[in-house]
Length: 506
Image (cartoon, rainbow, N blue to C red; front, side, top):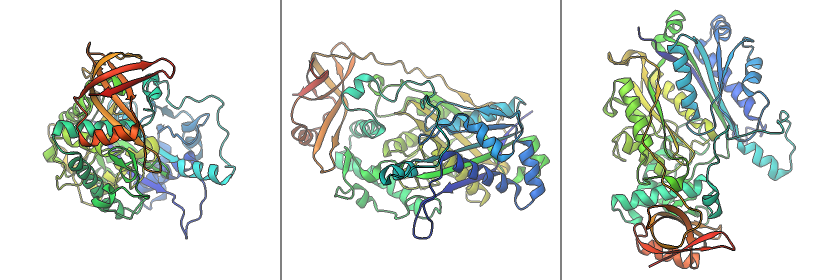
């Protein structure tokens, strides 16, 4: 017997202050609570009896971990304010942009196994308020934080000691390395690659312009996105500021997920979105250990498994929301789903993380909510949503379908995690001798000057290391933009005083 999970209610919340909306500085849990109430109300419609019944039936709650704040008991606190049952099951997964889908897949597994009938999934971020309060010297009236909180949830840090020592600390330095590798593998010129990235984001920006929940609705053109100027400076080559995800938002979303049995009992099945399939896969955790940079083996595996589980292919999709923290993530999603980057179907339903807004780990919840709304409006029958965690270390894919478009072969079984052969390359902390460039980026200061050149290189024995330029960054940057660095060879030496490996290209 098939037992599908049915998304019957959704809600998105955006609190961007403007002339008519004062800044209220909501903490993440407050936004999660608001979104959760909205999802329950969306499922119930105007019927207060149905709303009360749904609230009483919620047996599982899952909250996406925020970055802006920490809580002693996040899920329990939200559940109490919603008036949910005392013995509710609380689900949690480690942080990452993939975490909403991991939680949704866990909920679907519980529903398929008969362990749950009604679940709430909510997440939000308040980085805008946190940063604004810090800038303006405002003391936030938010709940007391625990003294020790592991925001990574037991996971390794985003980057290794080796990577951080050479300046590769954040996604803004990591994802440009994928873009440069894609450019080399595709045999495009640097200009052609930048124009491709800008076109993808201009498509996203157009969608965001029509989305009332989007943080930015100004819809810049591809030329404006690609052009470097004081307002759109180069961050890390080849990404300008407007190619980077924006986490400085107060946003959230929530979903109400019912078993097929309960959805039919409540008369909600015909208007729901069914979780047809879902999968997650992992690559080597640290970027320097990655075997490939021009494609994501784990993303390919997750999308393929999700399609297989759902008994569909990419041609059966009416729309997509491909994770878009940076253009390379969209390109990985297109490659995994065998899409052209100019496929006429929507590649985002929200506008993406650079324009709709990237509320930390919770963005995919916004995408899933938008997917349900698109189906309810009759704009799509089936949607693929992808998620990315860390530096493309954790990848997820979820296929949603309208209830009247379920393929006969779809099983409704538990979504699964795919094991991928992504054995990590061996890395070394110190290096001497010949090396070849695997990928690279240049980080720029606010004044537009090159600050640091970062390479990932392979040594003659096949091991990897990270290096900075042995020469002036500005001079090196000019050379790298004139001659394709990937595949070029040089000599690397270790500076014991700074702990830095230095590469001089031939």
